[in-house]
Structures are given as structure tokens and as C-alpha cells.
Image 1: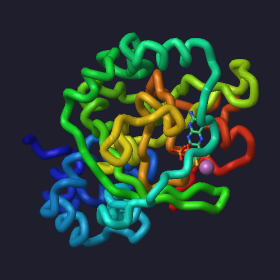
Image 2: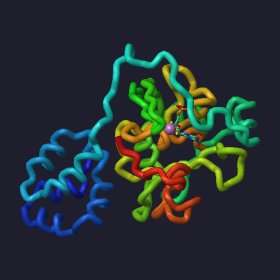
Image 3: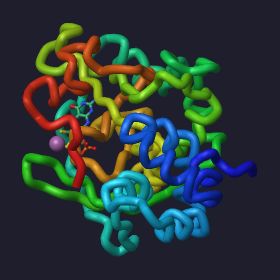
Image 4: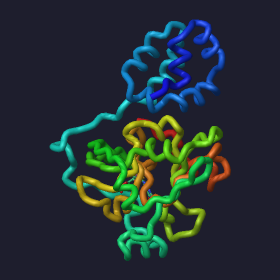
Length: 267
Ligand SMILES: Nc1nc2c(c(=O)[nH]1)N[C@H]1C(S)=C(S)[C@@H](COP(=O)(O)O)O[C@H]1N2
Ligand SMILES: [Mo]
């Protein structure tokens, strides 16, 4: 694997480091993009970063925290029942048609600012490398459940699709509309690239070893484990890479953020 530009620059000369620091916040995002996947899985790379003199705490945090993992639990910690919340039985006709034929015609579209748009069936998604994790889901309403999720790492998919340089967020478009329908009530969510490439961010198709049921977002939902419940978009059918969130729906990047919740629901 070739070394990402960020690593090269940090590992070479002090001059390069100074140049990099001067480049400031804006380009940090871009550099991170180039190196994030390798960084999170590479202890040597992390050591290089930790010891690089001249890095401010803020810069270190920006680079290192995207790789921090949410706690994972043991099988014995799994909640006996995982509460379902928000939409739990969408009545949107297109969704009901998918349920009726077992999602055979459902396709996950990966589109927007990507080099290679993709359309994946559920079988395609399940054929990919999977990750299983036992994590705690925290809803702002004040409840938590521990569950085991299995799905395809989002990073792999997005590497394959290839982000265009302008892409800054992924938007998850869902098949459910809230409170009686209408496009203005369609559920959606979005995440920044650090969460896109985070190792625990998966497109989950199983909960506790069983295919994802309708109440939990069948056929596929997002698990982005360092965030609150409402970021965990269910009933996904379209993933769109965008440069800005302001032109989508209410402009705040999510159904609940448009209604006053924080977009960055980090925990
Ligand atoms: N498409 C969609 N995704 C959604 C919601 C929703 O209503 N529609 N509700 C959110 C909220 S507030 C929570 S707490 C979780 C609930 O997931 P669960 O039903 O698997 O517990 O889904 C989130 N994702
Ligand atoms: Mo929630």
C-alpha cells in the first residue's frame, strides 16, 4: 500500500510539517481524506502523528479523534429486546411493495459526487466483506439498548465508488416519510467524511444475527456508532455524496436537525 500524502509529509522534514500546519483547518480536511483509512488501521502511522513535534493539541485531536472507537460489548450484554423507535412500520407504498417481495427489487444507489455511481442489491451488499459489532444505541428520548449489528463497512463501498474531491458529506435518503407522508416529511440524515471512513460505520442488514426486521429499518440501516439514535438512518435506498447540505430539505442535514436537533449528534 502506498503511503498517504499526510504520512509522507509528517514523516519527512520539519519544513514540511510547518508548511502543513500553516495550511490550516481547511486543507486538514482534505489531507485527512487522503489518509484516513490507512491511519485508523495503522498503529505506526498513529505513533508518527503523536510524536510529530510542533503539532498543536487541536490539530492532533482533529486527526486522531476520527479513529476513536465507540465502546463494544459482550454477547451477554445484548438487550433482551431492542426497542424500535421513530418510523417502525412505514406505510409509503413503494416501501410496502419492497416488503411484499422480500426486497428482491430493492437497490441501494450510491450517487452524487462519486467517480463510479453504484447500484447494489441486498445480495451484492451481503456478498461484500462484513463487520459485526455489539454497541449501545442511545436515543435522545432517554433510552439505550445494546445490540449486535452486522453489515458492510461504508468505507469500503465509498472507496470503490471513489469520492470526487468536492465531496464533504454523505446523505442517506430513506424510504419512509413521517407523520402521513409528503416529501417534506421524508427521513434523511448525513455524516461528514471522518464518520464515513470510521471503522465502525456500517450499512447494517442484521440485528442480533437475524435479518434486519421492518421496525429496525429493513433492509439496510446505517450504524454510525459515535452518534445518537437519530443519526442511525433506517430504510436507506440512496446514498448521495454532496459538497454542502444547505440545498437538501430544510438545509440542516437531517430530518431532526431540520427540526432543531444538533446535526453533530456525537456521544
Ligand atoms: N428512516 C428513519 N430512520 C430513523 C428514524 C426514523 O424515524 N426513520 N428514527 C431515528 C431514531 S430517533 C432512532 S432512536 C433510531 C431507532 O432505531 P430502532 O428503531 O432500530 O431502535 O432510528 C433513527 N433512524
Ligand atoms: Mo431517537
